[in-house]
Length: 231
Image 1 (tube, helix red, strand yellow):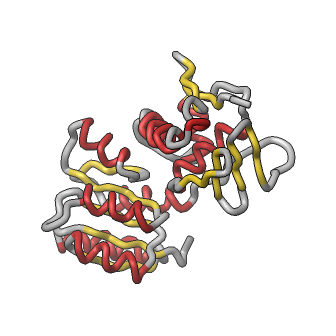
Image 2 (tube, one colour):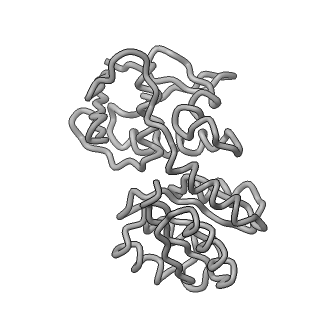
Image 3 (cartoon, one colour):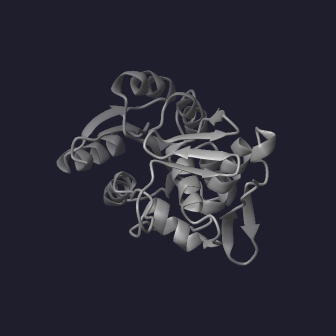
């Protein structure tokens, strides 16, 4: 984790510098940028492992940058927003952000979120770890982190892949949000458990791009989610 690269995108220069120092002190390689257009250019060359991305940016805002990053990068994205409206948090997650922090916040909290992202566990499965999982039309290559539905490859984010893998690891089970949080985000994650719902919605949308993928994830009322074996 000490060699991980973090791109901090924040138009408040002083705040960006403070966050950058905290991250560098913890051993990260850090680059600071202060507008959305520069963030996209630097992301292409710097190839960050994590992007700390403010929503309110000059030019392209954080939502636009997040959307563009998700077309080209598999990095973790932690959004910083001064907006407390639920719709803004959900919008960030729906665009592919992995987590969000509401400002004002301390640099220590941002550091903790970045560290939590990079400590995220691989899915815990009892027994042997198989290189691939096949459930009905769904095929998951665990080592290559590749997903296909009836032979058609899907473009998933890291979080979407880990969430699908967690469900596939126990296909007959109904998993609670807490169980999925522990499997995908790790036991040290803190925040709203309904982050799971947003990522499940994104995952369902991508699965539904193929007829065989629609309905693969089932909602278990009062519990959480499970995987439907449609074979």
